[in-house]
Image 1 (tube, rainbow, N blue to C red):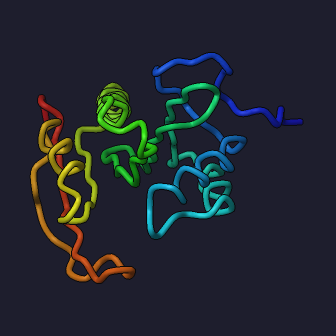
Image 2: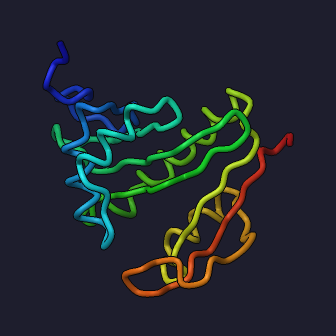
Amino acid sequence: MHDPSPSFPANDSAVPRRLDARDAPAVAALERRCFTLPWTEEQFRQAFEHAAFAVSGIHEGGELVAYLSVYHTPDELEILNIAVRADRRRRGHGANLLRRALREAEKSGIRKAVLEVRPSNAPARGLYEKLGFALAGRRRGYYPDTGEDALIYVRSAPDA
């Protein structure tokens, strides 16, 4: 039987922790605060059932304030979402989560990371470029809420 409490401890810490299906309500709640097309709690629960899906999160005061979700294959890491609560942005949480995901991927032999981002999301694009991602393409009309394109960014591991 699963313990219904979240997988992160109650004490404050900016150290990213691996989340699991017990955290689906908190991840979905943060997702709703940050995105116009959020995943539902049920979508997160279903995703957590797959070994290729992973979420890391940062909590403060016992509350999830940032998370990063990914899918991975043996040779590629796809960054799905990075969400940071609006009042906790510009504190390095997104960079911390992304660096950790890239480091873990490289340790497991994954040498390529990809992601999609709205052209209008300048802060995210700046972070990705700072961490070695390069613009590789565009998906026209990708986001159904606005019709905005998606920019495709790719990063190869330094020794790849």
